[in-house]
Image 1 (cartoon, one colour):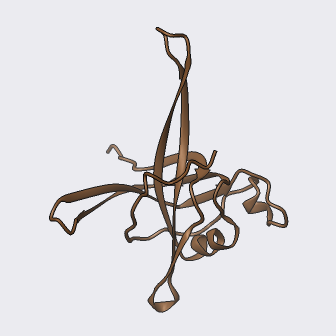
Image 2 (tube, one colour):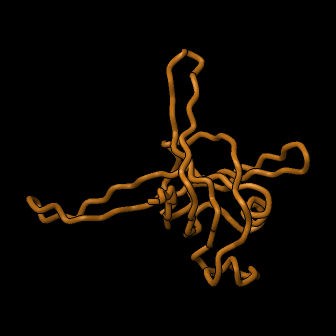
Length: 144
């Protein structure tokens, strides 16, 4: 039998400090955005062009606690996890949808002063990811 896999892997810059949510049963959720950059040379003009893509990331429990302590705007991070589509109706009745990476593994690729080895690019952080919502602010400042 063939197996399908839903796994996103990105490396980019955090767009802003993580937003923390403290829920019932001592559950904690962190959401943040990551910007990736792609560069190419235009064949007609021979000039270099760039494109920026934004990704919304959420993580829970143990990973969220690590994100709260160590992750900040402008850090270069690596994120892995499945992608989930969030759908909702706006106040005006229009349908909206957003893709969210449910982080299963996180790394900070920058060196962090005083951080344990798992956060300074040496190893992935452990911890499960679970389910909930968030929104992307496409007008936020680019962190690079």
